[in-house]
Image (tube, rainbow over all chains, first blue to last red; front, side):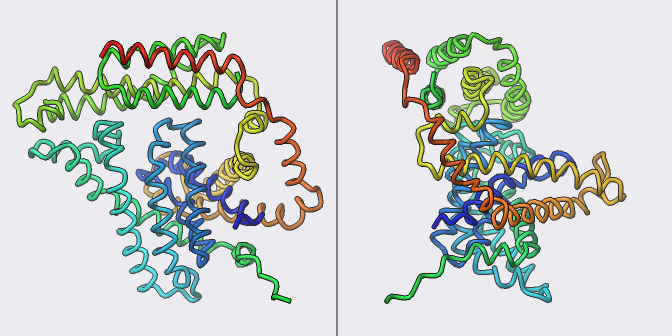
Length: 206
Length: 240
């Protein structure tokens, strides 16, 4: 499962997860972009689904651990969210790998699949993240979505419901953008690198 | 102290902070963390300031939401009570102290290894070789990516495609920066994997370097710090 090119791909995607936040910060983008490497890793290793889940999770996990040590100490609490994103990406988003690399680009299919898989990733991510957001952050994570939480609390919702509804309102948008960026990066990745990640051919039985 | 001991201590403190539900228990965990920081025999002000810098914006945000907008604590909402801003403030304070402990525990662990290179720290961890190799490769590639970001950003600003300050152009063309950086590092990775590393035998040398720098799993100092955590847990349990 862990061939040298795959180890390099995991490290690259982990580093991408880490560094992309730096890019978003440098050009002052109002989005997180913290799971692009995880989704991209699953796309690169697809159709080997088990390897894609394991490698994407490791890439995401290393990314949040390093970010946790250097930039944001609260990210490692979202390890289960990383696992959920890795599973969704390897089992679902990977199905669109052919569409994402198709030349010429089939725009309606590309856009449709990005939106569908982005929304699904966002919903799963929101459900898995909600308990952490409630327990560790008291429902408020410092992003604009906190005011959505406040709105739901003000209407009498319980904290867990408010955090979940807020996540469901905001995560699908963020994750759709991330699936879009991962798909575009996957599309622009040289074929030579993708070929290096294919499972090693088994020698025929003698 | 060994890297393993630091990881165990930090995880224990973070778990303690996560499980603590009242001010006394949080106070005990905070005290243990401060002692741990002071035990590094280095100045802890920088670590305290960094941790406070991470938590204060969140505290302001939480204060605005819980005290300013909602005006009552979650327990009061659950019990359908009218609630008070004081209870909301106490709730925010507990959450913020917990977050501060999490941030400071990591910084305090770093203080114990100031002057160590990442390679030496990773080499000292007890972990499967593939995990250690991945950590080192990732740290190396982060440097590569950050350098690629600097180069690409400068080039795109010079070309007038993105700007130095926040702008709509950045929002429209920021993608080009991401793509440029990705293509740069993938090309570098292909070159290293296919030619450079096999010729220089880099991965085998890395395995050797990580194996030779392996420290003892736990030292006497580690046991002392872990005993402090156990004592703190016992005191917190006794005061319940």
